[in-house]
Image (cartoon, rainbow, N blue to C red; front, side):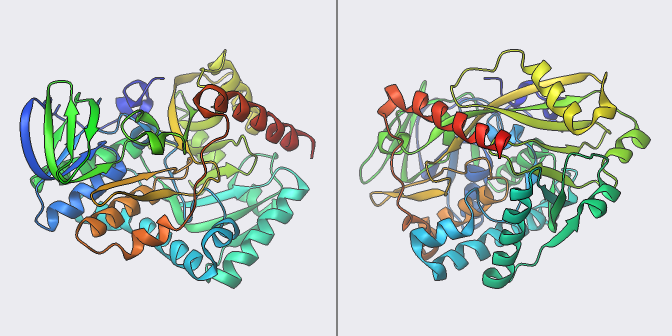
Length: 424
């Protein structure tokens, strides 16, 4: 899988000096595995509270999902609120939803506080293709308004067509508070803020083992870091460090393409209000405009860990199904990588023993939730674990089949959901 280094994001990213490799033996208060949004968020919170923090990254800052995702920042979590309520009750489900809005606000707070230029744009629309999806989205709208005091706008097909130059969709559920940004520049901005607050970030420093105990130790390829508290924030790219966590997430490949520059007039004609858009199929399409007038289009997932054949051609077909007027437009970039999904699509955050914390299972819905996870883990390290304990109430079962058979089983299950999207 190619990471952020091969994406349009990388070519348009702000300069980021390479950080050193970890070597030798050192001591710190908190050591964090993963220099993505979760890890950097926790690092900033802890450094500002006076902790000495080390972050270990196997590649470069933002190399994984944090720096090459679709860039859509949306309220809530990957599973819907009724699912969360069934797991932990309505009162705690309401808390989680309100905290997800805090995660959205946190992006704006940090953009301003740390002066991060990441091309934020307001607005996101969930769009239905089938009549049943219209009913599902309108039921979701009612549930969010009635039970979570979160109003969304329903747009008719005609209203949507005023903003989106596509006849594919039957309407839209629009949220003005959600939006989109350049995820790699946002991640790099958080890294700069962390470094400025004394956090040590080591790149190209893969963790090979975690020795647990009263003083956990991360072992790297060239050294080791001893700490009072350990944080696992590597998500889909961590395997073997905490086996009890491995079985509860599955790496799924996701892919995005960026067209050649379309020019301001042509780009604006596609999405007049510059919002981000996602359909509600299981294998969904999502798209938005870039700051240099490209269309960024994501719409392919691999549950087998193998890159789909003819990926560029498949992405072009999906894109022109939404925008036939782009027939003949080239994709200058196509990239992808893994996201981590949990079996129930709910976030899996918690603690192993007394001093090892983790956050995983963002399930493709992590741009805002990751910042929240970092803050909540930092609170727990500081002895305030009330919010983390609410997340930890959610029971997460392992994927069936073990490592040998869980991928074929998931592929079969996803084939059924794709067939359902196509037929009903």
